[in-house]
Length: 457
Image (cartoon, rainbow, N blue to C red):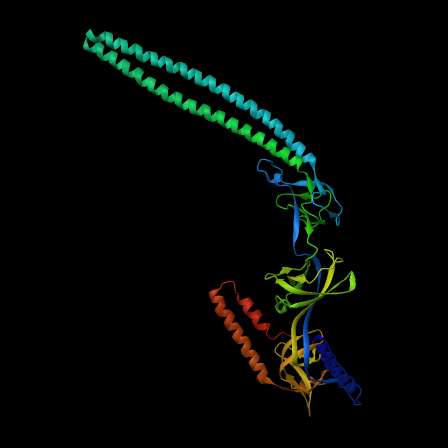
């Protein structure tokens, strides 16, 4: 089937070239280069360059111990690395993280632990001393109450005033005893809280030391499985190397890609991205092995574009799955991708160079009894040809070069222009309706959508 399509496409191209050649060589005062409108197959393709990477991979990351809440180390440098591209077995050395940072923090943590231990001992001594004084005061208040009780009992045969005074003194020391009891309970809670805080602080300091010791033992990074080592990029976009910093926020040191499942990551400009869909077939070639031709399929198209460096243009990420396995394929190899966005069998086609445009219409010059400017409705195009939807028929003779006095040439096909204008208005109406429901659609987007229906050449 593919061979038949190639033969038919080649035949159409030969007919067009012969037509141009014969008309070029006709003797006339003015050379008129023409070609005929033909019906045949056409493939619409988008060409991009990409980079190979594994579809799935295992990440080699900083040790989990670095994320301990008591560690307090937010970045750590790499002091040694295995050469990139090395094939390793599970448990084999990959990298070493800087021990000096751990040693400095560990020394400081031990000093803090000693201070916390002293603070705990001081808190216990202060508590014992404070509570001892309050206990003596409580004993004295209890003795005062017993003494006043005896005085009240002995004053039973005294005058009423003496009895009343003895009872008032007893009540006074009783209130003092209750106040001392409450004061003792409060001081006891305060002393316990102070000791508990000091003990907790000491516990945290000891826990920090334990976590730092575990981290120190985990600074040698080893491969979790067999594979080829590919180093990641740091937060500045530079490949990880000796001296690079890693952290819990940027934890990936390297990856072990699954070499049996490769993809090509590429970027498509905003003009062509509307043509790209999941499932489209792709032909790939490897720059390092130009004789190799691979097949693939688009499986992921980004919805949001990103700006190109030093440019206002935007590109969209597209991922292409490479079919089959080839041991010669390596991550980061450059690929040339040809994405087939459309296959048409019986379509009217003309060379793209024969199409002209202004701000309003697209048109071609057609050779009839007189040369006319024919407004056309065009479809998809590839690098050489474009599909004609309306305005031309098979066998029409289209002129490449513009006439000497184009302003005198009659324009026909205004009904096509009216249809296109109605289409623009309909698109604007739909966008305006959607903008009322969805505030993210702006007036500028409406205008841009309308203009995109009739782009200028």
